[in-house]
Length: 236
Image 1: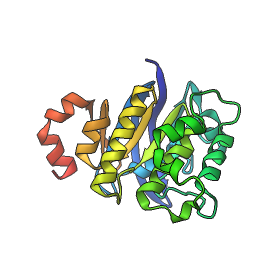
Image 2: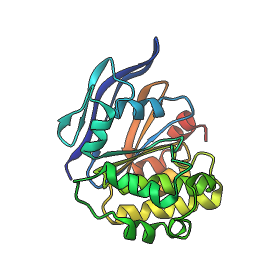
Image 3: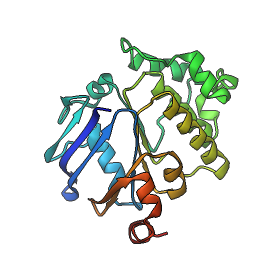
């Protein structure tokens, strides 16, 4: 497996506040990598920096062998980095199907397995609701739509920012099953998460961020056994 994403000593600011301090990690092709941490630890700022919504003051981000530091977010998306943001950003007045077609337009010219038929196979609820305005869907259904819309662009890397936030246990289980299926078809995933059980069920590798620093990194089997780390940084 080669490197698909390299985050190299990024330092990011929110206004005048220094939020990320020399944050570094590497995501491999085909891997599900989980960035864990409490609320306010720096997970979302890290994701915003990767897609250049926030440009780091120093440090570099490399995607698929290319230095994307300072590049416009839409250009990064065209390279195949697909972000599912925490706030979902669906187009409420448009139908479910129209939202999905917009996702395909974002990935125009990029080959991959994802199309409407496959999306409807993975997300049968979206096929059932394809003619509904997206804004009428429940929170969990909107989360599924946002993931499906991003997949329609055939991204090389799928970024999921706090995917279980605010979802019921039943929908969280559905999302877990979905991510495991995505792993089976070779999808490379970087997610930020604070739900430990969910992270342990879907991830191959874990890094913990706390107060803007990467404090810990390990393969998932090692992390599962490390109760002290969980208690120290994740308040278990």
